[in-house]
Image (cartoon, rainbow, N blue to C red; front, side, top):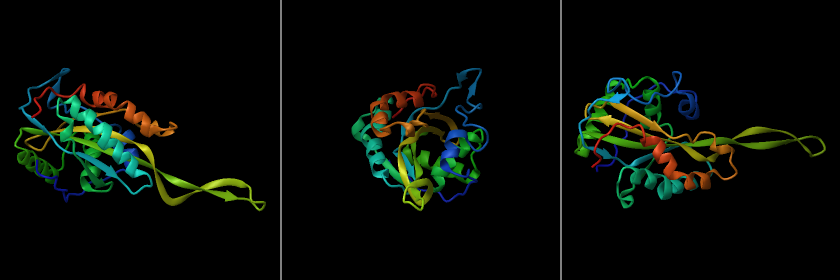
Amino acid sequence: MPALRVSLFSTTSCATVVLALLSGCGGGLATSNPRYFTDGKWNALDSPYSLTPMLACAFPAEGNDKVYRNLEDHLAPAIWSAYGKDTSEVKVKKLKGDSEWCDAFPNIASDRFIVPPRMKKELAEYVKQSGAKGVIIPVAHLYRSPIMKDVLGPDGSPIGSVETDRFGADGTAGLFVHYVNESGELVYTGRSKTNGLGVLANPIDYMRDHASDYAQQMTQKAPPVTVQ
């Protein structure tokens, strides 16, 4: 499949990516587009859909490399397996956290699947390039936290801490799959419940060990389509 072309549109973002993922910019992340999901049932979607490379969205942070490896070695393969795809086909594409595509997907979902015209055109072209009737785009938004520095008292003992201008990876990520049809419309967003894992002693290992559970969370309520 052709490499993803980063779009040039701009959107209004939340104060931080983390806030956008945890709460949405407009009161919560939607999951199923009401235009295609009515009375608890999915309307027929044209098949097949194509599984695209996973987008790994991250702002600079120490330790991001470990999270990337976790995505490539465990989480992305679990998603491919959930769709019945050969894990040797797994591809993970790194994108900057403030890139337009990384910023847009959570906002679109929280805005009830209203896709800006320019993005809709680009998504439709992306689907066309895939040779399918739609695409499934896995996305991982890597979490980070400021690295703290101790504040010392006159006697050299710590009396508090302050944030530095450096960040460290939390070892976890928000995991999503976005279904986009040939018109460039967002049909479905599935997400896993990974926020909060940063409080664990070793979130990297935890996410690795529960990769299949996260894949199931993202896909269990998805529209029934054939994946090519």
